[in-house]
Every structure is written in structure tokens, then in C-alpha cells.
Image 1 (cartoon, rainbow, N blue to C red):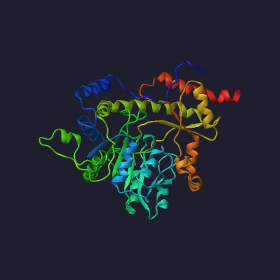
Image 2: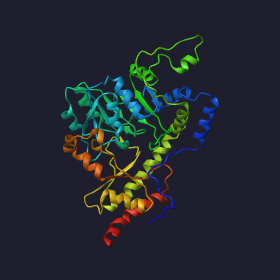
Image 3: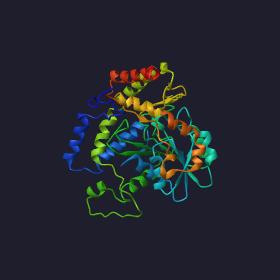
Image 4: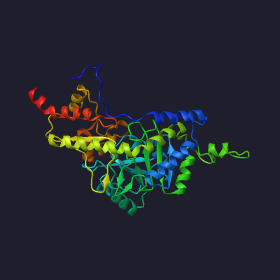
Length: 388
């Protein structure tokens, strides 16, 4: 067991350096700190990277999802289908818009929405489907979109974890649905500290989103400051302060420039994990179905039935040896705001996955020695348990 003074291998760590520092310093010297020219530049660069026509920067992925649903007209009494096996923000944004989340079970291999379960959850009150690309693996978009189109339902992609992931040769965010929403939280591969982005091919939606994120102003700050004559903005509806700052955007531009390298390193480390875990016989590695490209925002393993100890006990054993982990993914329906007996009775795959998955350390600057240490501890656990 490691002592308290020894360093713990973190589950994640953002990759930031002098380029990001210099970019922030340049913005500080410019005098324009809030949403301005750097945000616009980041939006253009992000749209080009994922292959989208429009990108709208906001303060987080949660606010991105909230605005996306508002722009689609979600209101009180409307139902939105989504997975329970996701971070709670996926459901919170539906409630923020006035709607009600309807949870659908997951595919036990991909941990994404099971398309076969979607149709049976559709009611006359259903207004949209929120498809999550869980931990960076794209959801079954063709199947989900086909079902949604038959019922006249728009699909929004919760792509919080999916920057750089690909669905049949096209990057997530192109977008494949009406809108895709990304997160730039420090746990994500591309980070701006906090922040989010909405991509869409619909110019009218993009314009509405740009207004809603800035108090529904008829004119942006940039337009007013560069005007050659006095102009006054209007406020034609209730809006929000969901703006990204130029400080964040400056970091995002640097991060975007190094993104391909970050992705390649994560895939390399993920492959090393999978090769090291395969011989153990009691942990299941992530899958990557044909045509899908995982970005390995997280490396999630699942304990099989012959595991030598339970999930929580495994996490404690690893922590005792200086290895930080996280439970795989939460089950939203088990949290107080969303508890309902019918979800507990029907979401069998969600419950099983929630109770048996673990996220292992994976970050850009993780060394092979650190990874080998994690694999060595995992390999030794069955023998140590047997001796105890």
C-alpha cells in the first residue's frame, strides 16, 4: 500500500502548457475578456474540425443542451427520451426546458441507447430524443434517426465526451442529427476550463441559439462596439447569460490545434490497457463496433461474474495502492430528483452496468510505467484476495 505522501495516479488530468498560457495572456492584454473575437474564431475553427456548417459557443454542455431543447420548442409537459445511464446533466437540461425525461435502457455492450427500446417509449407527449455518445463511443445514430423520423421527432446528440469520435467516417458534430452539444470541462479531452459548443446545419437554429445565449439581444456586443453610428439593442424574448469568454476560447483554439495528438495518445494507451486486461479473465474491456471510432475520453471496464471482488471493493483496493478510479457511469433514475419505481423495474441493463463498471486512469501525459503499475495491481488482486 502506498503512503499518504506518495502521489496518487489520477483518473484524469487536463493537458495544458505554455501555449495556453500565452494565448490567455494575449487576451488579457487585448482588453476584451468576455465573448468577442476569440469566441468567433474558436467557433469557426471548431465547425471546420467537425465538419459542421455552424458552431455556437456557450458556457457549458449543460447550457448547450438546455438551449438546444429550447430552440426545438420543448416546454412544460413535453417528454424527451434519453438514457438514465449518463451524467445527471442529460436529464437536468430537459427539466430546465420544462420537459420530462423518459428513460430508455442501454445496449449492454456499447452503454448507449438501445434503439430497440426507443419505439416502445414513444407516447403522444414525446417531442424529442436525446442520444448520448457515452464516454466517447458514438451511439447507434442510423437506427435512432430512422425511428425518430418515422415519428416526426428531432434528435439532439449529447456529445459531451465525443470530440474527435467518428461515426462511419464522419466526425461526431458534423452533425448527424439536428444539433450536437459538446463539453469542454477539464475531464474532457479538449478543455477550456468550462465551456460548451452546439453544432448544427440549420442557419435559423444557429441564429436563435446565438441570441438566446446572450440575453436574447438583437445585437451582439461586438456589433455594437464596432458600429459607426449609435445603435440600441432590443430584447424580444427572455434569454440567458450562457456566453463563453474570450479567455476560454483562446485556450480552446490551442487545444483544438493539438487535438489529433491528444486523440492518438489516448487510443494508444487504451490499446495497451485492452491488451493487458484481456488475459485477466474477469474484466471486460470497451468495445468499438465496426464503423465507429472511439476517442476514449474515459477507459471503462466492467467486472464479470467471476470477478474476485465487488466493484466498490475493487475501487478501494486500487485507491489503497495509489490508483484513483471512478464508478463507471451513474444511473440518473437512482438520484432523488428522478426516482420512480417504474424506472428501477425496467432499466435492467442500466442498473447492471451502473453497479459493475469502473473508469481507470487515462490521460495524455500518463506514462507507460504508470499504466503498467495499474495493470500490475489488477493482475495481482485475485492472488492477494485468495491468500487473505
